[in-house]
Image (cartoon, rainbow, N blue to C red):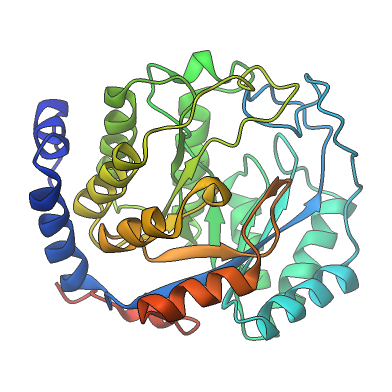
Length: 323
């Protein structure tokens, strides 16, 4: 994929919406089943008391959000949650821990044991545990982890306005370690944090420039949480959000574009437009880590009304790789 400069990406973004969606659809159909949506479940396996100061996050120890911290879940509880998710239609199970970074020791060993247990259920396993080094990423892969999530969040320029406790290059180093270990890379960002449209486009350009490109790209709409510095942020206009989905699809043609946090504030029609623009994954379950998410029956009903269907586990690994 060639590197795109900002002017080129902005010119795409500013196309008439029908033309932009047409181009995104052309790209989407070359690499994916346009009626398939991957269903994932995200489980917080350790909640709260994170040392990072991410201004959007209720799990940060820097802010008083009333969130109750929960210690690391044991393996049996994680595997039981994964089994419920599988029975509910999810093919990918993601485990998130509110850590700044992975530290070798008993807690990481427990996560590795949980990864093995979930993998044995036949599900794809994704982890998001903060920063990791190459050796830790390799241990995750050996345990059965398929994917590692580590979001860039926003543009390099706007990033210091959101997080000061780690750098943009720290995040890129984790992504490089994950890829080197042979794991799939999941990395995206959040819109609606007070950033400009150019910041959103720069984020997508940064992700598209990673070689090879991320396998999946979650696009989150900020869920403003009382007690965090971003609690007063206004939502991104629906059409602006759809345009970002379309740009993500065009710039990252083979990636799963995940319609992630913030869906409770989206109408069925907005979500349908996002699917038409190239989104092909959602998260099931009433929570995404600690923020609300639509009920499973709402999501399954929406997919049914749209004539869309769940993507089978591992099916995306073989989609569009020839072109």
